[in-house]
Image (tube, rainbow, N blue to C red; front, side, top):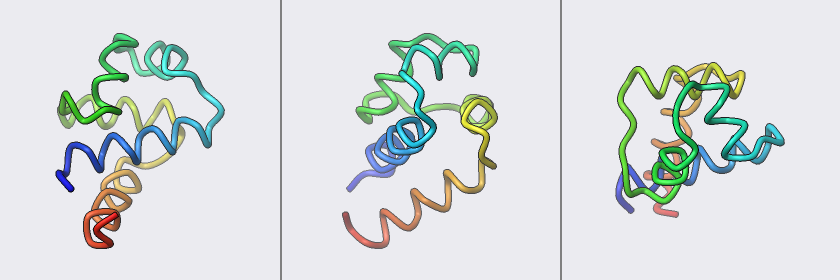
Length: 77
C-alpha cells in the first residue's frame, strides 16, 4: 500500500469517528471539500501545514495521524 493511500484511509476513519462530513472537516481546516475527498482517495497528498490543520480540526495531534499511517503500512492492510 502506498503511504498516500494509507494516509487517506486513516483520515477518513478519523473524520468518521469524529462524526464529521468531508465538508465540515474541510471548513474547520480551511481547505476545500474536494481536496479532502482527493486526500481520502489517495489522489492528492497534503502538505505538512495541511496535515496540522486537519489534525487540529479533528481534535487529534498530527503525530497520531502519522503514527496511524505508519501502523497501517507496517500491517500491510
